[in-house]
Every structure is written in C-alpha cells, then in structure tokens.
Length: 578
Image (cartoon, rainbow, N blue to C red):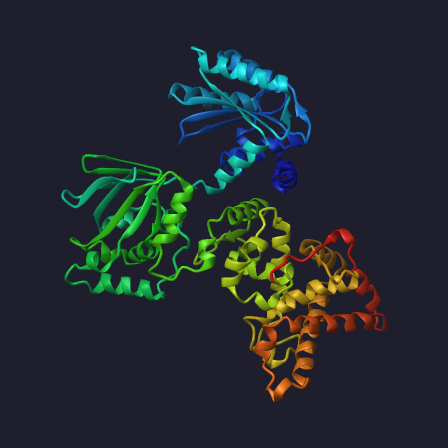
C-alpha cells in the first residue's frame, strides 16, 4: 500500500498542490477514500503551521458526518502514541471552537466554520488516524483508552479509528465500488398499481410506472443512473432499441407494459410513505437500453397518458450481491465477457488511477460508453482496446488480441493488474495511435494489400513488433520492455516514427516470406490463418533481427539502433497467456 500511494502522489496534482509527502498522503486519502474531487480535497487539507494537530476536515453530506483526519506517512516503521495524543489534543480543542479558530491557520479557520455548522445540524464526528506504519504495543493500549474516552464523553462524543495498511486496502476497495454520484429520487406511485413486499430479507417494490415519469429519473443522459450496469447505451441502431422505439411510436393499444420485460433498479435504501417511494443510492442494473431509448423519444412519450412500464426496485446495500443481480438480469442484448468485467475491482482501480493521473483523459470501462466532449481524444482509453494492447505487448500474443472473449474470460487474471501504471497505459495508447496513422488508404508503410485487408488483426502484430525492436536491440529477446520507458526513449531520441516504420517493414517482410514458402500437402497459404497463429511471431522477430543487424551500414543507422537499447531493469518476463 505504501508503494502504491508513494507512486500515486508523484502525479502532478499532488506535487503542485502540496509541499510535502505528508500532505500529499492525506490528500490522496481524502480523494480516494472519501471521494472528494481535486478542488474539494485541496479545500479539506488544513495541515501546516498552526494546524492544531488537524491535517484535514472532510464533511460528508450524504452520511451526515464530519471526519477529522491526522496522517502519518512512513514506510515499514512503527508509530508510537504521539499521533494518537495529537488526535486527542485536537478533540479537546474542538470543544471550544471559538478559541481554536482564534489561533488556527487560515485554512483551518475556514474549515472550522463549516464544521461548526455541521455539528449544529447534528452531524456525527469521527477522528481518523491514517498511517502506513504499525502501532507499537503501547500505542495500541492508548488507542483503546482514547476510543473509550471519546465515545463516553458527554460534551463532544466521537469515534476514533485507526486506518492502518490493511484498513487502507479495505477502504480503497470499498471506495472503488462506491456509487458515484449518489443518486436520490422520489416517485409518486399510482394507487392500485404497485405492491411492496419482503423476499429473502430484502425489501422489494414492484410497480407500474407511467412511461412519461421515466423522463425525470436522474442520470439517464450522462449515464450516472447506470453506474452498476455492465454496459452503457448501445445506441438507437441496436436491434433491441429499435424495437423499443417502434413500440413507443406504434403502440395504439397501449400495450408497451405487456411487450416489455420490465426494468430492474437497486438502491441502498428505499422507503414508502403513502404513495411516495423515496430511493437513495439509486442505480438501474437492467433497463439502460430502455430508458435511454425512452428519453430519445421524449416528446412522443410526454403525450402518452396511459402507457406504463414495469419497475422492480430492490433494496440491496451489498455491492457484490448488486453486481450479481446486474449480470443475471441482463439478457435481452447479449452480455459479453468484457461487459461482465466492467465493474471488476481491478478495472475500477485502473480507471481511477488513469483519470487521476490524466485529468484531461477518460477511461471508458463499459461498452457503449462515450467520452465527454471536453476530454482530450489522445488520452481517451477504451477497456476493450487496452486488453488487446496488453495481450500484444506484455503477453506477446498479438495473434490472440482480436478475441475479446479470450482476453476478458480466459486471460483476464493475467492481463489486468491493479498496479499497472497510468503511464504504461498512456504509452500503449501513444504507440497505437502512431501505428493506426499508418494503416490508412494512403498506406505510407507500403503494406501488402493482404495486410491492409486484415486491419482488425494486424495492427496488434505491429505493436508486438515495436516491443521486439527494443528487446532485440537490448539483447533481451526473451523479455518484454516497459511500454512507458520505450515511448520515453523514442521521444527523447526522436525515433518514434522510425521505430514504427521498422516494425511495419518487419511485419510486411514476415508475411511475404511466409507466403512464398511451400505449404505442406499442397495447401494454399492463408494470410488470415497465418496472422492468427504463433508461427507468424518468429517470422516478425527474425525480420527485425535482420534489419537491426544491417543498420550500422546505413547513414545514421548505428545511432538509431543504439537509441533502442534499454537497461536490463526496463524488462520483465512476458505475462503467460498460453
């Protein structure tokens, strides 16, 4: 955990906004665990001179709670009772807010005003000591004593929690699954058209909802309502969505309710008072295609007076159970292995890390998800594409890259690693953008027409060839270079385009060589079969070795070849995928 945080706080945001690693650690915690955005996190941090042993104050409106944070960012060392006494000191000082505010720094003064208002509204107060170290035995005894003292106090009762390495991991994983944003909604239910029940200890409401009431559900347009769905809208050209649209416009007998299988929604809490259904933490897990299509027909839907759709509302606070319901209820449009992985913790961790590192970028984890218009297209990464890049580069099996089913089913565990860095993802994206630029109609690399016809497969072999250029030049042919280090080296040396060209020539030569070889049993050579087998990889590698061997004989060739050489530390063994 310490290494992960240490790496994360190297990001520009933390380096530019906070002067030391102690503050950066607390800011990381406030952002990643308490879910504050970059501006909110900066506002929460109070650490510095005259901070009165308070490093941050977070006010959670949804939980109606105040969190007072004290952080100790150390490696594998131990933590004595000193920070616990600092927490106790801050608790004592908070009992007299006016005196505390008088002597506090400017940031703390401002935050204490917000804290005072929250306490007046009855918010609970929680003290958190966060550390990557281990408490000494004596400190653990003090922790128990202080917890008892804070809990039993009449003037300012509070909780004190130690958030150590194990608890940090647990909270980080919970934060990945937390629904953002937290959607709330109220529905007026028509008398006689709903029923409330309890099944297997779970509150359930089944209701016929007027189609026009669907238009006011929050989060349809921006996709927030479908956070826990395995995919986003697949567009109006999807066959199922076409049928929904046709039913809306052609339903003269108001039979939409009978033609439609219904919509499934989950929430963390729901309550019925009279004919009003209040929902908190709302998410639609089956019905994304229906609701987005209904919204696209909004003007027609507004005129439908007696057309209904069935809703099933489940109160499901457990995230893992909600995920299983999401997967099980999606069957109208085919659910692919990639869809089933969109909410996996590893994918969510990659998404969070990437979008924090590249604030102008976006990580598209769900099929049908669209990039926001303000995002930089150069930094928009799609989960499906990333899986193909990882297979080609790290597993060195571009012949499997075409198969999303294998990537997200059979090889998912090997490919998607939580600690894979945003820089590596960006580098793979940068290489692929350069590669695709050469696969257009103008054909700058002079590709064989057969290769151009295999655009769905061959560019991943091109990416593999680039990785092999660095491996061959560095004499580490059995290992794989780190993509971010190759991109860095190529950019620094000004050889990016040249490397792409060398790799393209190798791919072209390997295909033509294979096509000219005699086939066993008099069979006809099939380029599509060749590109999908491992035998093509040795042909590409051999072609690269030949080119680099000849480089010193060409003007400037030796310098370019030498620029491909990376240190041994830049390489690792390939990720097994067969």
